[in-house]
Length: 222
Ligand code: CTP
Image (tube, rainbow, N blue to C red):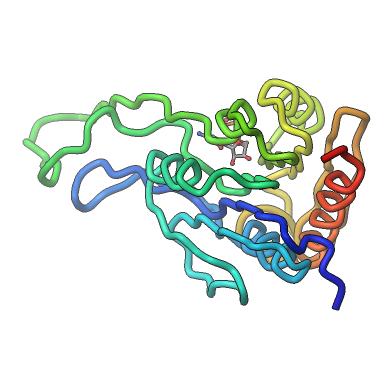
């Protein structure tokens, strides 16, 4: 078997993050982790040393992959930075953008009479943007974008704003792609343009993404 990523360290994030409100409740999202796990598996198949930092998901660890489980966006940020440096970073996790300002130490109770509950949320740190700004920077930084509208223009803007090399965008809310599906349809943006991939299985798409990453590594001066 060929091993084009032999000697390369690849860091992948996958799955959702859960932001605790109190000991029994959290804010989460619908990410299944399948796309990130498929990328981790494809990178390991290509011979890379792979560290997979996973939010709360129910998926088996791909063969040959070192997995670190985390829960919150803050824990994922810390785990990623503890695992750097790397040659490649793939941020496939659906990281919460906001987290509760405080975690209540005991269960939030109804007092009776109130008609609602206001939660104060604060921004999380952007792991992808922080990795792209970190020195030494991974040679290839890839992000994902899940969008419901204006997919291409949001993806182009996101790629430039976060200074990532590759940004894979997918439309959520359409059948046969997105969070829980085994299949996906992506448009991968780089500085030069975009490439449409799929619809295809997340496994086959991951193999193509890893080939794109490998080509970028090969084309750049060491
Ligand atoms: N991401 C991250 N850390 C965050 C938020 C997002 O690393 N705190 C990464 C995700 O892993 C993904 C990319 O940023 O690779 C895009 O995430 P997305 O939520 O789609 O976009 P946002 O940048 O959060 O923008 P918006 O919510 O406005 O769509």
